[in-house]
Length: 230
Length: 226
Image (cartoon, rainbow over all chains, first blue to last red):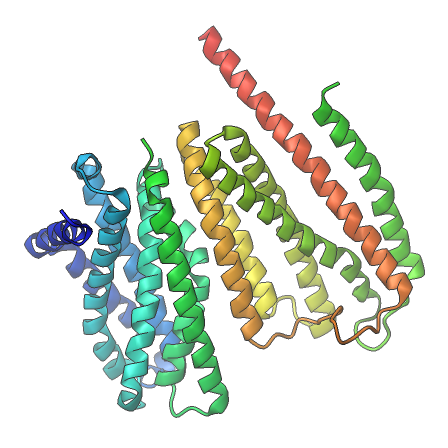
C-alpha cells in the first residue's frame, strides 16, 4: 500500500467512526455554542457589537473546542486498545501521525464552518465578506498549527497517569505564537476597514503562521516514531 | 573526590566572588540613572544576566533532549531536566524582577508588555514539562516524552520571541549596536554579574545532575532489597 492509501485508511476509519457515533462533532458544536452564550453574558452591555474583540473571542472558543476534539480522538483509541492495533499494523508510525492530524483538522474545520457564520451574526456588526478569502486562509493556517502540535501532544498525554487532563497544560503555552497570529488576522479582518499598519501586522502574522506550521508539522512527524517507542 | 564535585566546587569558588563583585559594582560604582526610574534601574545588572542564563539553560535542555533522541542514553535526560529546572527558576525570578521594574518604570505591577508576556508563557511552558515528567512512571517513557517536549518547547520559545519582536514593545533596549551610550563601570558590572550567573548556573546544574544520579542509585538499591 502506498503512503497515501495508508493515511486514507486511517482517516476513513476515523470519519466512519464519527459518522456512526457523532459524539465528537456534536459535543464540539455544543461546546462552541455554549461558549458564545457565555460571551453574551460576559459582555452584557455591548453584547450586540463585539466587533472589536471578535478575533480574540473566536479563537478562545476554537482553542478550547479543539482541545475537546484532540483528546477525544485519542481517548477512544486508547479505551478500546485500538492504538495497539494501529501500532501493530504494517504502517509507518509517522503516517499514523499524518492521518490523525488530518482527521483532527477536518473535524475542527467542520465545527468552524458552522460556528463562524453563527458567531458573526451574533456578535460582529461589520461586513467582512470582501476580505473573506484572507480570513479563511488565516483560519486554515491556524487550524494546521493547532492540529499538528495538538495531535503530537495528545499522543503523549493519553499515555500518562493524568491522561486528557495533561493536554491543555502542555498545548496552550505551545500554541501561543499561533494563537497570537490567528487573533491578529481574524481580529484585523473582523474589526472593520484597516489601514497600512494593520495590513503589515496581518502579513507578519501570516508569515509567522506559515513558518510555525512547517516547523510543527515536520518536527513532530520526524519524532513520532521515537515518541511512540516500543 | 569525584570529578563532578571538583567541578562543582570550582564553579562555586568562581561564582561567589563574581557575584559579590557584581553586587558591589551595582550598588557603589555604577552611575545612578536620573532621567526615568532612578535607583530601580540597578535591577538591570542582574536582570539581563538572568535572562541570558535562562536562555542558555533552555538551550542545554534542547541539546540534552536531542542527545537523548539520538543516543537513548538516560544521562542526557537528567542533564536536560536539571537544566530545565534551573531555567525555570531563573525565568520565574526574571519575571519577578520584570514586575518590579514595571512598577518603578511604568507605575503598574503588571503590563502586557510582549516580553513580560512571552516570559510568562515560557514559565508556563516549562512548568508543563515538569507536569508531564511527574505524570509518567516508567523512566524510559518519561525520558522519551521529555526529550520530545523539550525539543518542541524550545522551538515554541523561539516563535514566542519572534512574535513578540514583531509586536511593538515598551521594554527598554539597553544595549544595541547603534547606541553605545554605556559607561565602562556599567559594562564591567554587567559582565561580572553575567559571568557570576553563568558560573552559578553551572554549579547548580552539576550538583543537580549528581542528585539525580544518587536518587537513581537509591531506587536501584531499594529494588535490590525488594
